[in-house]
Length: 230
Image (cartoon, rainbow, N blue to C red; front, side, top):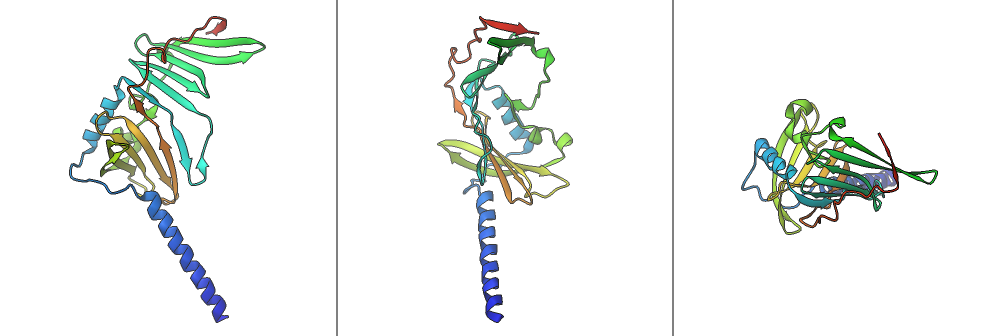
């Protein structure tokens, strides 16, 4: 009986060590430079700068310990206030924020192709968003009741990147959201969400590429042959 209890104790100790290692690894952001801390207001100002960035591409990928959540590939092409959304290689939406024209490609049915054209007045606009990538958890402290912490800065793919953390003031800091933000452009590069006392990590890599989008990439869709729905 003593041998059995000893074996069980060893197994339990090993499991505890493995869980502790896993916990440390999923929360580790690398070795950060904390010499130049930024306030929440300064970070929001940087994110506002990113909102106005005129030429970039991104394709978000959500993953966790068991792999990717969704194999659907969604791509966004942004240039000069025009945004084209492509899903699995097919254009699904095109928006010109200069003219407020919005085109939705609705697909095919009974050998007919359908699209809709509308004005942006019909859509709610999130002011705290970088072309669909939300940062209101940082910017809107009152609504989301979030605490804020600047974690530090490091190089990611050769670029200076700051990392900040927010969490609900009535909750615990390990159930938090981290944002990786390019220090020069203000673009969000990555978002990490923790849940279940910090044991579950959902990692969204935005896969941002700057200054590669051409006029052809964001050209207005050719709607010849489409039936236009109101």
